[in-house]
Picture 1: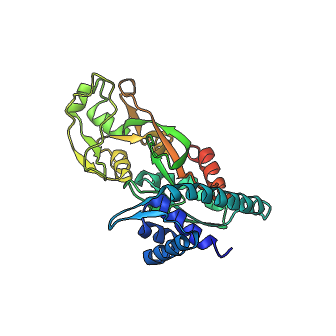
Picture 2: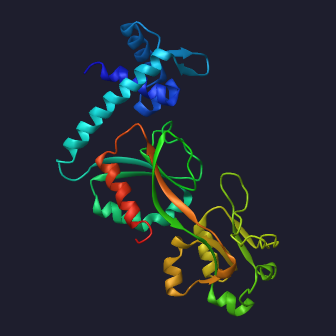
Length: 293
């Protein structure tokens, strides 16, 4: 068992390609990781990493050793999972990253907290593209496609971007009949926090060259909902965030026949790990509840 600490240090360093990142994940210093790997190399009598001032890369021996270590830790995790599933309710801390729009997932998150009070949620809301492994997250929620082979993924649900306005605004300014009519309307825009660009409105192909007025621009969704409800203009927003407003009639859809959009929310977690009981129930719960909570 005394060997598992250095083995874990080696695996984390190999997967993150960094002693510093491995130290962050294991909550120790980078020098402690380096020393653990050096002791392991001395015991094995082989070099596991090529080291430079900026990067580390696996030697052929290190790559073979990594695969064997992964199998060892997978067996340990599987054994722990098997035992944990017999010990009652899942518990422990889950560190999760969600997009800023994830603030609108709070009904589902609140329902999860009520259902699993022994699981502590550590939530980081950001539109920055976090590195799940490097930054030590248990899982992240993202919209769009995923190309990172290090991650497992599960679809949580789909959504549409739609155009909405308040009944009062429509009564005062009229209901747009074509995309071209938007040029004469107040338009409320969302700006991407990551690149500062305005999010395009999902007008059907051939109708996207309309020059939209920029009556207001914000970088989070909640103010757009509030401004639209208060009659300040037309906004482009995800449908899952507007169920209450649409059901209550405080917002109505605009130009449905002229918009076309489909997006996907996914949960992602490191592929090298078994799903712990706490993460398994979270993934299952969110997949079932996110768009119905």
